Length: 158
Image 1 (cartoon, rainbow, N blue to C red):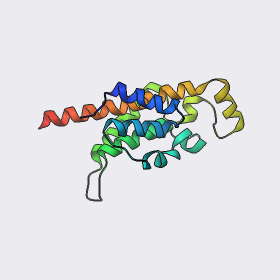
Image 2 (image 1 turned 135 degrees about the vertical axis):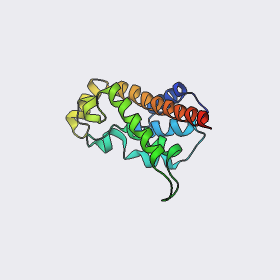
Image 3 (image 1 turned 180 degrees about the vertical axis):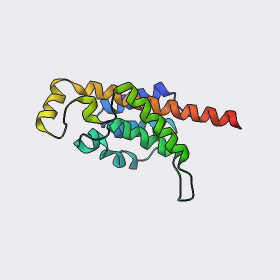
Image 4 (image 1 turned 135 degrees about the horizontal axis):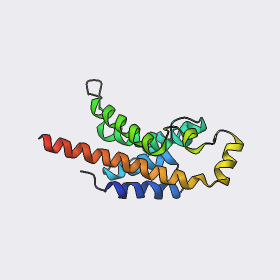
């Protein structure tokens, strides 16, 4: 069982983001911490996923970090392991995220191109960091809720 509730996991992600980490880094670290996992490798592995895949208007970094967090718990350890638990959870995460934010990519959510000086200025002028803070928290909450749901389902099946 998760050591932190989904709401605590989301708050932790928001705090990490507010203290200087970026979206994917904050989300994966918060989910990992909720599962009792600590590693200095996690933020490094997540850095390139931040800001819509390194400012390329790609997948939202908060969503990418949440996917990485699910993989930490549900991913396979070797080639013989099944991918099904992780794939199902990631699919559910993506659907919930898109329902809530209308898109899964950074450009679609923020309506600015972080890869340009104009887009970065728009990000600052419109204080979109506040929106990113909220999205980072919500991505962590959704992932933590999914982990709780999966754990509860598996407990009932035993």
